[in-house]
Image (cartoon, rainbow, N blue to C red; front, side, top):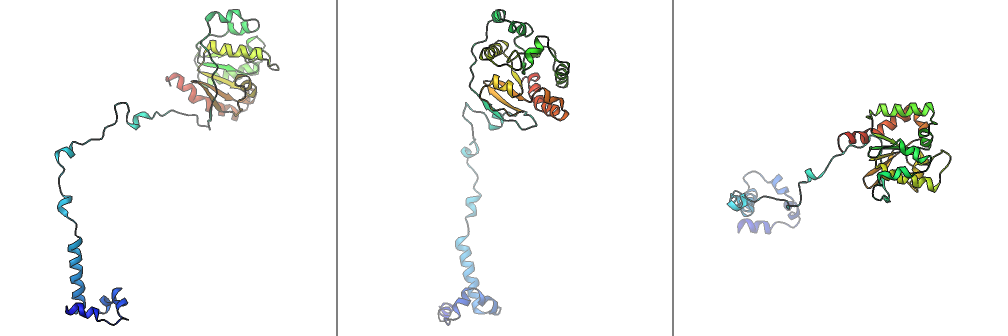
Length: 261
């Protein structure tokens, strides 16, 4: 008890300094104070030393066979996620209610009045792309402008669209008219032609094809698997920068057709 009694009889003013370890600084080597502290340290290490045998224990046979398995109706996450290309420009999608019914009978086009019967004679169901714009009725009726025709051919050539991939179907017969009857003809023709993509050139085309939708160019509206691609007016595509932006937007969608996406 000599050393313990010595610490207990230490002057009160020294005890805080000793508790902070200052006695180690001032105590000379071989002094009883240092020997006492070393003994306490060794006793503490022995008391708190972990059981190394517990950590070195080998797993039993059951542990070595334990595996993590997924339920039968699920696949690994890495296989669930599918990566799809998206246009390089900003693309927003908006879902709208689908009012489509069953595809129309093949004889539907024969009962149309003019000029819609004339339009239908130049279209063929099943083609993946449907173009519509306010002047489409004029073009199908033989009143096309050379500038607009050249621009459309330029777009088709730049996108490398094969023959037989396009239909042109008006959302109105004249650029300056829009009636509920003609809009109904457009919707009926859309059912009949059943395209994968509808190319809407300009806000008027969007307003007739998707009433109430907000016009934001280079976005698309999804209608149960059919995409309505919202584009600028054909006239605005005469500018090189706008033309390049249009191709940049359309290219991923067009490529998805030929790779089966």
